[in-house]
Length: 224
Length: 76
Image (tube, rainbow over all chains, first blue to last red; front, top):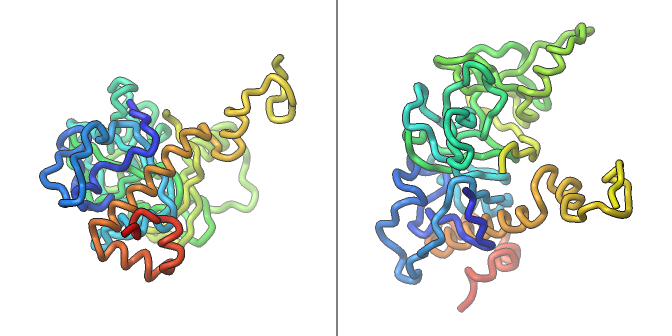
C-alpha cells in the first residue's frame, strides 16, 4: 500500500542509483548497502508498492541513467513484479495489473491476461529489465519510451494514436501498435470499445516496428 | 446539498474532488503535491550525490533554474 508520507524521497537514490538503472529491488523498498557520508540512514522512508512520484523534465533528467536511456516527465509508480510470470519486463513494454494477486500487493506482470488481455495495463517498464519477483518503478503517464510490435498494423507517424498490440505472448508481448487508417470505417460497439480500452498515448516520434519510440500517455491512473 | 452536475454546481461539491478532476484528471490534488515533491527530492539527492547529474541539469536548464528548483543542492 502506498505509505503516503509527504515529501518522502525515492529511496534508491540515497545509494546513488538511477531510476532506470539495475533490474529492480530484491527486497521491498530496496537494500541499501552504503550511504554517502553526508546522509543518515533513511529509516522508515523506503518506498512501498503503490508509491507514486511525479518527475518534472529536470527531475527526470537528473535521475536518468543515460547509458540506459533518458527518462522524461511523468507519473511513476513502485510495483511488485510477479515472480512466476512467463515473460520478463523489459524496457518499453507494458506491464499489467496482476488480477491473481491481492489489490494491496500492487503486483504487476508482463504477461497479457487470458481474459482481460491488455486492458488493465499498469505502466511501462523503464529499466533494461526488471527481475521477476523484484520491486521497481514503472511509468504510468507522461512522456515515455515504448516498444512497438515487430510488424506495425498501420503506418507509424508523429501524432498517431498508439494502442496496446494485444499479441498475447511471444516476442510482441506487452508491445504497442498503430492502427491501419480507413477512410470510412464502419462503427461498431466492439470497435469503439477497442479504441477506448486499448489506447495508450500519442506518438511524439514516428513508431517503427520492433523498435523503441517516444509516446506521451495522458494522466489517467487506474489504481490508487 | 448535492447537485446532479458536480462540475457546474456551486454547493455540495467536494472541492478536493473538483480540483483533482480538473487539474490532475484522476489524482487528488494532495496526492499530486506529494508525488511531485517526491520527484523533486529524488532529483535533489541525485544532484547532491552525483556531480555528473548536477552538471547535466545545469548545462541543460541553466544554473539559475537549477538553483531555483533545487535550492538544497546549493546550500553552503
